[in-house]
Image 1 (cartoon, helix red, strand yellow):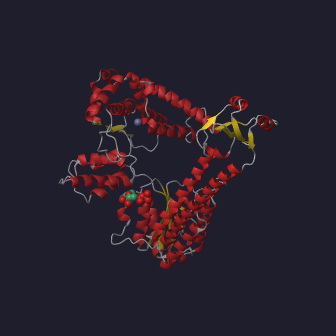
Image 2 (image 1 turned 45 degrees about the vertical axis):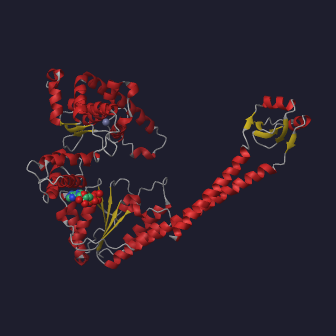
Image 3 (image 1 turned 90 degrees about the vertical axis):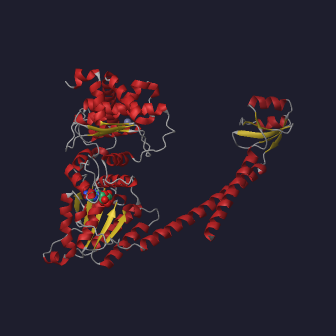
Length: 593
Ligand code: ADP
Ligand code: ZN
């Protein structure tokens, strides 16, 4: 309470002083209205004897008063005999800048005080935060897994990663056995892969199976602006862990402290934190029974120092689940739920390419919530469908009254463009759903397009992907004209750019730029490679856009049909889209051919 009051007072003083000083400043600047005179106008007035005085200071604009009392300003001619001319014309020359200075000093001091107060206020806030961080740190205890101990049973799919981690269970339980043989077990393991693929889950399962405490922290917790704090936190974490004896320490987002040091964006603080971590890791005895598991989305950005032998020398990939693993994960979370008979988890596994384990779990959970809300006896297909939407695009926006008919029409043509293009050029892709229902995450609608589950992507696949992404904008342009294209394509453009750049930089798929990896070359400045990549990307993108435009233009009739149906029904599934295509005159002529 007292603290809050003090804060309020400080803020009030800050505001008040700021206000007063700006008042003082403005008072000086324009006492009343200032008459702006050109130099010629000023000379005329002076010759007519209208000028009372002038403040002769070394500034581009000079100020003074006319005999009628009004203030004026004019340009400083900076000629040598200007003062003489003024004096000859009976103008009072005020060189003594007291007046001006005093005003300036008042406002200057005012600002200083204001900033000072602000500074004190802010530093108090941050030192409060610092102490909060400290107390958070000292309170850090092993995370209690409670009664529901996580074991490898809880991890579906991810077989290789699981096996790899299982090896470590024995090491944690019987470190002496390994010591006897002179074996050195890894002190650190890095799990890398996309978010939500079960890295945390695996680390917890290791602790659960080995029956040892589990300490969890996140690399981003360590990133502090205050010198030394991060390193201190690392040391105290390890101290706590050692007190427990055997344990698993889990560091999420290790990249936050262990980014590659390229000398350019080096940051002393993260360096110190990283060094503390490395020191602690080499500090504990090899067979002490402590394993540090770190997780990151990207291995290639990590500092090599982390990956050296004796540190995180075991690296395990945890990838997105393939169709079999997806099926297993869906079954794992479906087993405990009343699923209706019309739910085919195998089919859903096929439709959920690129879903992470976390998204699949989310899908099952959302469906269950929807069914519960309706007091339905079972989870039905319609619940799954709706949950599917939520997982992909966020919650459906309930209040759609603010969306104009025009916006809806634009969205309809845009999404119809994506769907049509998919059907025309990539018939193996599934278009499971097209909708113009906006989501709360800001999407106006979406067209769900699932490529077949395959290990590699061909150059054609990637170019098709780009064309499908561009088809939304293309449809807008064809229907509403070039002047009326909208901001709705920004995500599509981002995606298309990502694909084209990786084709050129990474996959050697551009003849002009050649078979080079431009990330490897990055250090070689002045090669002009960046310019060439951008030039080539722009060229290819332009070509693909034209091709897309030609294709969509040639099938305008179907585009219209899909868009109109979307405006009416809001959501279309694959069968409905296929139906519309089959009805079109163009269908028999070419699509079947
Ligand atoms: P990460 O650490 O890779 O970002 P998590 O381990 O935190 O991902 O996963 C988040 C959640 O997703 C888990 O709590 C679990 O519910 C679910 N999940 C992810 N992968 C799997 C999997 N392979 N098997 C079962 N559940 C999974
Ligand atoms: Zn789009």
